[in-house]
Length: 279
Image (cartoon, rainbow, N blue to C red):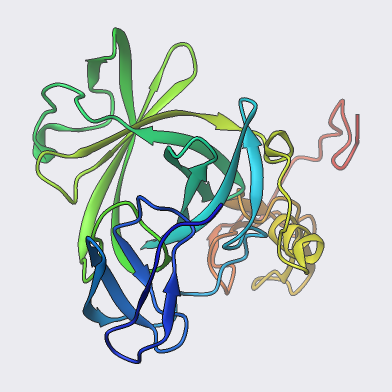
């Protein structure tokens, strides 16, 4: 898969596009943010290095969704109060594009909906609100204040120098998902579904992909109350964890594992299914 090429207006290096529909890219030599106008490139800024990612995905990763091959050509990075996530820009071999969202070991594939109909204002979108979209009913399950952290690679539109914004996640009874990106007016609407990592048949992952996935899933910390070692088995997804020694409830998302609740006395219960059992 290849697209046109042009010279960087800042350093003169050749900039080759993987996708002919790309509007924005980054020069691999001088880190200039470049916006394409026909055959010309305009320098609109300089990108700071995107925050490091624990995802095994990288630019150039290839995979398959619903039988269609794709290549990862770009990324937008966002941060929020509990960490951050990446939106990976996918280009399919038929020339269309989509997005692979990777956040806390959850993955979803979605596509921009050009004409989604009227969308309520940001202030009207709250958890529990139900919207009729694409002939189905969706409920707002979460709203996330976030901040733009950076980009890399090729994007389908001009996207740089952004600030704070809010995302709204919606789900249907049938398991479909919709995301409202309220950085634009009207909001950008993306529709798709959650997917299992293995279903994507990803190739050309980072060389340390195995270590990255293990690091995402297992994290060991010390209980700040009693000093015992506490293992978080799903580090990317767990919010709270209980210390087996003193029964303190710890914040699994904070670096210092802050104590949220502690008990002087506790009942000892043997679960029907032992913790750590595999099936």
